[in-house]
Every structure is written in C-alpha cells, then in structure tokens.
Length: 404
Image 1 (cartoon, rainbow, N blue to C red):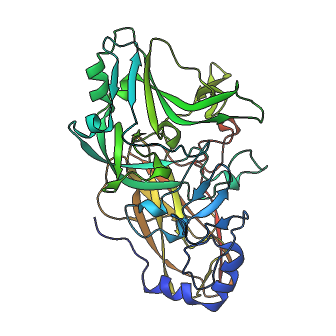
Image 2: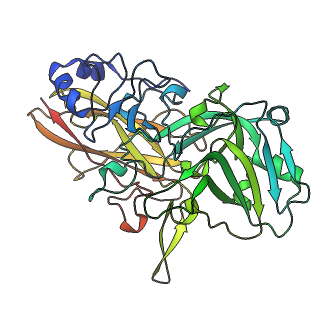
Image 3: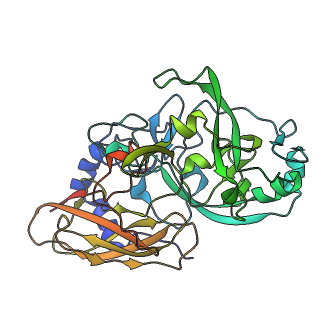
C-alpha cells in the first residue's frame, strides 16, 4: 500500500507564519526538527526530550511513562516503531532473553514452559493490527475525566510477527471445562489511588477461550519487521486484533487457562464500563473497539488559507469489522459529504481517507468533523455515553480551525 502524504496545499499551510505562531501554543509537538521548536498542546503536554528513543512523541505522563503519537503527523499506513504511542501502567521491566520464560498453566493437561528460542522456532504469522488505548481522546471529555489525558494519538497501526496464541494452547492441551485465558505481564506495581489494588499486582487481562483461539491473536516478538522494542513489550507481547490495547498485554510471562471468568483488577475495577441489561447498568470488561474516524489535518486551531482547495485527511477503524465509509462536515455538522477511502481494506488495520475541501472565502473560525460507518452498520456516535465512563471514547470529535 502506498504512502499517504500531505499534498501541496497542506505543505503551504504548514509554512504559513500565522499557523506557526498559533501552533507553538496549541498544536501537538510533531518532532524535534519542527521549525517552531518544542511546543505544548492544549492539554499541556510536553515533547519527549531529545536524545531518547522516542523524541517525536508527546509526553502525557512521566511516571509511569505514557507517550502519545502526534496524530497531525499521520503520513502512512504503518506507524513507525519510534512514533507508536506508549502505554504503561507500571515501570518498564528489565528482561533478558536468555532468562525469559513463558509458562502456560491452569486448566491444561500439559503445562508448558517456553523459552524465546522455543517460541521463535515455531511456525510464525505476520498480522497487521491497529492498537488503540481504551482511553484515547479522554482529554476531550467534560468534565475532566480521571486517567491519562490522551488527545487523538493513543492509537497506531503496525505489522506484528509472532506465534498464534492458539498454537501454545494446543500444545498445552486445554481442558474441556476451560472458559478464559489470562495473560499476565512482567510489569507490576501498586495502585494507591481509589480504587486501590490489594498490594503489588501485575498487569493482567483475560480473553474468552473462543477469542484466544483466533489465528490472528499472536504472541508477538517483532514489530514492523524489527525486534520488539522494550517499550512495546520485549521480548514477547500479546497482540489481540480488533480489541482495545489493554488486551494486548506486554512483557508476557504467564498464560493461565481458567475454568471460570477472570475478575482481576484490570478486568473489573479498571477497563470496564456499564452495559444496560434489562434496564439495569451492569459492569462489564472493555473488549472490542468501536467504529471511529479521526481528523489528522486540519489540526486543532490550525490556520488554513481562505478560498483554496485544502486536503483534509485522517484515519478510521472499526475493531473486528471494517470501515464502509467516512463522511466529513466542514460546517459544524449541518451537512455531510462522503470522503474518499484510500488503498484497500486490511483486516484489523485502519483505513486512511481524504477529502478536498474548498475553504471559505471569508476569514473566520470553522468546525470540521469526520464520522465513520462500518460494515455492520454501526455509525460513529455524536456524543460520548456516560455509561462508558472514561473508556471507549469513539464519538465524533469537532476540530476547530481558522480560515485566513
């Protein structure tokens, strides 16, 4: 699939002096070589300091370190490893390949202990998968929500290589009474804010056995053709296509097959939302991603030239489904026009889109939007449901720009 790059009108907009002045205060940092130097976004984020592994990302939280991709810099189908957002719950563990082991235990007939060499010696699969933090876009919620204040960039699309989780489960011979598979990471710590954890705990999430056995669910050790970076789960992480990123547990060290539903901290007290059943709100775990489109350009508060053809663009995704169409509005949602989808649909990846916008002749503020519809008929909502708490933030996000 070809590169997706800004056109001439976009590059002209980037160079406008007014835009550069405005961007220094409002546009997320796009890289250490940006002409206006380090900037802060509207949410007060800092650029990652130079000399580190991820200089172009936005620092959202220092301890543990959480870094956001500047979505306005979107320029390709695959997100480079060094630009992929980083989500940590605890400090990054220091793991050595030679000493690393992955155990498969619980409701199995043959418990396993796999080395890195064992895993990489098994038949592999390469799979494109978009990962999005369940709290992506939380920074736009009002009133302010608890959690990392992500804007648009806690999302990325990569190519992952590894062994299907099903292969490990088959070797261990899952017992017939099994219902779920718990994935446990080597990262651990204590949650001291309410709701507090029962002391020091590892990050762990579970998958229904049916999902765990899907061929696309991987024990991944390569990312975009390269060794998995430490920040992304080296030496091995889970990749669960179609589900929010919390399911793709990093730094895997243990797989536990269970004969009852897992009710761990990050399965119930965190990464959960209310689902209405028989009129009653019932707390359930966050799982599949919602249908969603985001606008990369124009960026928030960007100054665009009046009376010109401007290339508006972004990306859309739909979890286990696929994007059927993306519509855009350049007048605050009064009217909608179908955008052009780029390239071919790739299962579990995002779909890039673009729209040629004839900007107004008169200067002033404009509000642009994008909304996606998937193959199931799900249409991106206009408002965030409070039942979703601070997760599954998939509603249409207005982008205010200025025409000059």
